[in-house]
Amino acid sequence: TSTMGYEFIQVSEPRPGVGQVTLNRPKALNALSTPLITELNAALEDLASSPTIAAILLTGSERAFAAGADIKEMAPLTFSQAYTTSFIESWSRLTTAVKKPIVAAVSGHALGGGCELALMADILYCTEGANFGQPEIKLGTIPGAGGSQRLTRAVGKARAMELILTGKSFSGVEAEKWGVAARSFATHAELMAAALDTAETIAGYSRVAVMAAKEVVNKSQDLPLRDGVEYERRVFHSLFGSRDQKIGMKAFAEKKKAEWSHE
Ligand code: CO8
Image 1 (cartoon, rainbow, N blue to C red):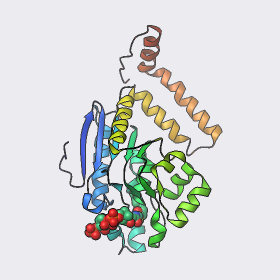
Image 2 (cartoon, protein in one colour):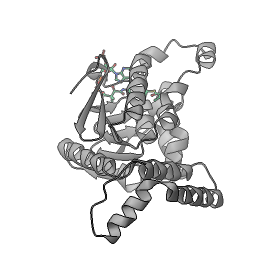
Image 3 (cartoon, rainbow, N blue to C red):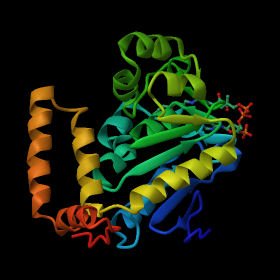
């Protein structure tokens, strides 16, 4: 594991084509401070432009994915400071700056901004015992990094309203049952192994096709169905202009393994 000069995160390449970012501020349960987010954005942008990385794994520790935005940093902030500096805006940069798929592996606490960060990932895996929640209401505030929007899209208005108004946590088992997580696992070790396998599987496909697939699925969250289906068809048509579509379909016909050109 290389730390690449970072203080609050670690960056590594645990499998071919897979870049892993591990939040590493254990004393504060990976609370998301501005310096941590600055490092996270820098690392993700590096991985996004790295020619050897095709998928990203974002994780924390067994005890905490992230226990929220740094409450001690936010406590004295004024409206004017928050407004004029667009506080929190850069925290969701990964949703627009990173076209490669991001798999989040969540164990332990994923609260407030930690839950919101996990919700920004493309695929979310967790342990059954993971502790998700939007407890901002208990601090006299509300989710600020998309929680009220992304959680509501994931679990529906009834549950999201209850969770956000009560600040009550939900488990990894519930996260899977409600569609927040794609899968949950009994142990941290199983979670990490599965998340790495999934990231490696994705990294083994045509990068052009993978990016397009991520793009069109994410469009479904923004567009009405008719527009989304039309958008998908346009991108689908465009992939007939890629070399990998020819390579993939020829390999199928010849019963061979596709050797992707990523073009
Ligand atoms: N911010 C700052 N420090 C934190 C945070 C946090 N969010 N969470 C934990 N810590 C610190 C604690 O202060 C403590 O530090 P110290 O040892 O110096 O006292 C250390 O981490 C360990 O924590 P605990 O001793 O409390 O550990 P426990 O195992 O007893 O409890 C909990 C774990 C339940 C997770 C508890 O720490 C807790 O309730 N934390 C706060 C959770 C919370 O309210 N999070 C929401 C924050 S608000 C928010 O995220 C707004 C979203 C804005 C957008 C974010 C963009 C991505």
